[in-house]
Structure formats: C-alpha cells, structure tokens
Amino acid sequence: MPLSFSLTHAAPASLETPLLAIVLPSDVSWGDASWQTILAPVDALLHGTLSRSLTRRDFRGGRDETLLLAGGETGVQRVLLVGRGTASLSRSVARRAAAVAARAANKLGVAGMTYWLPGVEGDVAAIEGLAIGAAAGTWQYAELLTPPAEKDRRARVESVVLVTADSDAARGALAAGEALAAGQDLAKRLGQMPGNYCTPETFVEVGRELASRHGMHLTVMGRSDMAEAGMGSFLSVAQGTSQEPRLVVLEHRGGPADQQPVVLIGKGLCFDTGGISIKPAPEMEWMKFDMSGAGGVMGAMEAIGRLRLPVNVVGIVGSTTNMPSGEAVKPGDVVRASNGKTIEIINTDAEGRLVLADLLVYAKRFNPAVAIDAATLTGAIVIGLGHAAVGVFGPDKAVVDEVLAAGEAAGEPGWPLPMWDDYREQIKSDVADVKNTGGRAAGSITAALFLQEFVDGFPWVHLDVAGTAYSQADLGWIPRGPTGTPVGTFVEFVRARVS
Ligand code: BES
Ligand code: MN
Ligand code: ZN
Image (cartoon, rainbow, N blue to C red; front, side, top):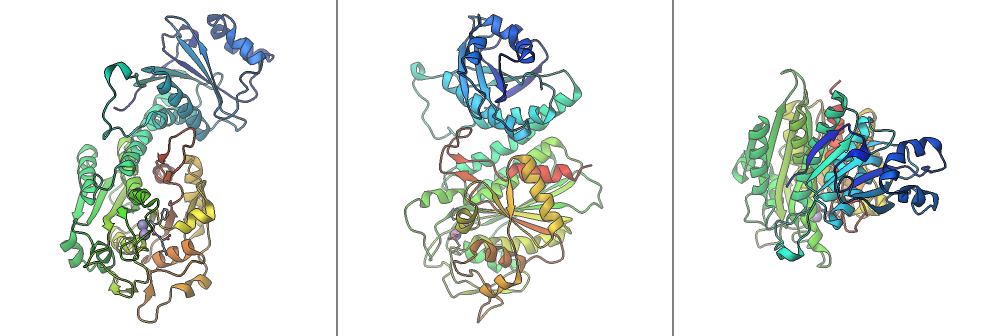
C-alpha cells in the first residue's frame, strides 16, 4: 500500500503521533543555545531525556545513527533521533535519514510517523528527500510472502507527516517527492519480481496502465512486428525463448507539439542466463535484475506523468529473456540490425547491447533532442566503479555533464568513462561490420562503443547501471535488492529541461 503523506505546521511538541523522527546534524549540541531553544519543548515533554542524551553524547548526529526515546501515552509517543552526519543538508541526505528512520519505525511496528528537520523545516529539497526516503525505507515486495499469523503481525508505517511551514513551495515539494517515490517504487517492484512473474508481457501491462492513467500514447511490438522492422539484433536474443519479446513505447506529450523529445531507453532482460554462452550457476538468480534499465524507464515515466512535466518525453523498453535452446543464437552467428549493420555474435551473454542496438535505431524516428539509455550492461562496470557510481558514456561532453548533474541531484552519482577510438579496434570483426564483445579489457567501454554504432544523428548518453540498480548487501538505509536507480537520474534530467 502506498504511504499517505501530509504536512503540518503545528509545533512538534504539540503533535499527536506514534513516532516523531527528529533529523539532526552531527554538530547538534545541548550546549548550543540555539539548539536548546529549538529542542526545549520536546525535551520538556520527555522530562529531560533528550537533553541528557545529547549532553552525555549518547547521540552525536552521525550519518545513519539513531536513538529511540520513549514518549508519552498520548501526544508524542516516541522520539527517534536520526543523524544526518556532517554533510550539508541536501535531498539525498534527507532521503537517507528518512529511510533509516522509516525502517526503524517499521521494526517498532508503528502505523504512522512524523518527520521534523529542526531549523530547516522549509527546505524544499529536504522535503522532497524526506518523502522519497520514507517511501524507500518502508518499501517491501511482499506479494509472494504468506502473511504472518495475526498475533505475530506488526503494524507498518502507512501515514507520514512532515513538519514544515505551510506554503505552496512545501506542498509542491511533497508532491514531487511523492511522484518520484511512486516511480522508484514501480522500478523496484519490477526489479524484485522473479523472472517467472516479471516477463516481457509485464512491461506491456505496466505500459498500458501508465498510458491510461497519464494519458500517454502507447505502442507495443511483438516478434513479427520486429521482424518486419528488420530488428535482427534484438530478435537474435529472443530466438531461444518461447515468450513473446516486447518493445514497448510510451509517449508523454507534455511540451509543445514541435518540441523534440527526450528519449529514455531501457534494457529489459527479464532473465539473463547468458544463452548458449551460459553463465555459471552461482548467483545466477541475480540476473532477474537484468531488466532494471527498462524498469527505470517505466518508473521515470510514472514520475514524469505524475509531475505532469511540460516536456515531451518518450520511453522505450526492449524486453525478452536470454535463454539457451536448440533454436538459440550461437557464437559465430552473424545477425543484421535494423540500420543494416551486421553483427558477429562472439558471446551470446553480451545480449543487452544486441537489444539496445535496435532500440537506438528505433529511437531516431522520434527525432530526439537527446536519447539516454540505461542498462545493466556489463560486469566490468562493477569491477571498475563498484556499487557507488553509474558508468556514464557519451561522445558529447555537454550532455554527459547534464546527465552527471542530474545523477548528482538525484543521489545516484555517475562517473564518466572515455570512448576513445583506440578501444574501437577491439570490436572489429573479420566477417561482419562489428562484433558484440571486445574481450575482457575495458569491457564497459567497448560495450558503449558497440552501442554507438547504432546511434545516428542525435545526442546520446549511455548509463551502465549493472553495479547500482540493485544491491546484494543491505545498505542500511535501504534493504538488499533493487535500489530504484536510474529513475532519479532520468527524472532530474527531464526536470532540469523544464525551465
Ligand atoms: N547482464 C549482464 C551484465 C551484468 C553482469 C550485470 C553482472 C550485473 C552483474 C550482461 O548481459 C552480461 O552478461 N555481460 C557480459 C558481457 C561479456 C560477455 C562481454 C559480462 O559482463 O560478463
Ligand atoms: Mn548477459
Ligand atoms: Zn544481461
């Protein structure tokens, strides 16, 4: 169930709330007169436990630090001090603290909570961050779990109140935060769905639902449509599966009719076994996340639709599964993409780029102002950048910088990598125009260079989210599993183009 959010400008100490989360920086100190003034009413309510805890340094405001203080039977029933660390307040700092608090609230079993950022209540970026973080911290994929017996059940956070000045700006920020949260929720749900639940057909269903709710134009293609369009590259990946491969397009026409759209493109491999070049069994189950680029596009379209952004945005996802079979494409086969280029398939596990190739050719018909693709494309990006940064590629420095700024603002930082011609040697083929792998060296770069072969005449940026779209470890502020990346990057990029 989605969270219900509201704003209050009442004094925090006067609130009726199961839990008041007070987000504090690391320089908080009871010895500081201004902090004392701000926190005194709540301290009085708690009979001095707040001031004593701060004086004893039981709580120091460190990032992810929490301290629970018991409150009254009614009124403020619990106080959770939440640290936001030394970093200055930003959307991602607020998001992280809010998520930590929301996870703690769920563990306690409270149904509602209130956030308070003392002294900076009106910060709109922080308000957005709180809403996004509250949703992230309470997110779960429980559809396939048997609910616990009544006596073992705990309440979960359902309603969230933010303490802030009553202003249009605050209300707008909350609405924006909710829109982003909804987009990220969708991307995460699709990511966490097992491969037998999230299939290419799921993208059709989600596309249909988004199209009707947001008044977007929907196009759906199947195997025969793609064959007609000459998409031999995409179809070679789908050759081994009996499931219908799907190309789904959503058009958000929020801008003037003649405005060139931002085109978002996503790799939607509902499962990647590697195909005939099959992957080893250990950890193969994680390859259900190989649709995270496509999930990110759907999530971004959800957020953009909710925000009613006055810009034209087209979302394109290509979805299938990479399976071995008697019919599957095999190493050495040569296929032809829809721009006429021939591709020698060296490794059937380098399938994402084969799907994206035809999507990038298809994108041209929309006359993009810029196209950004996102894909869990290479294991090499995990080796190079780990889980902290999205790999960002593109021949045009200005748009790459624009995407990097969007990622920074979204709390999904990216890092640029080169696309020099020297690397291009690695993907030259003896029998075709290009081959689909360039060896182990610079694997993420040669993948990006392969994609570039299919980009014709529009600015383009490629995001390799293989290390960032999901996490195999609990990150503290969000649990193990999908992270919602790259929804934020996509949405911030589009929002920045609004003005
Ligand atoms: N989906 C994988 C990339 C991946 C690997 C994502 C690990 C997340 C974690 C992609 O389709 C793939 O298999 N890439 C190969 C390319 C290679 C064969 C050139 C890889 O990275 O090993
Ligand atoms: Mn693969
Ligand atoms: Zn893959």
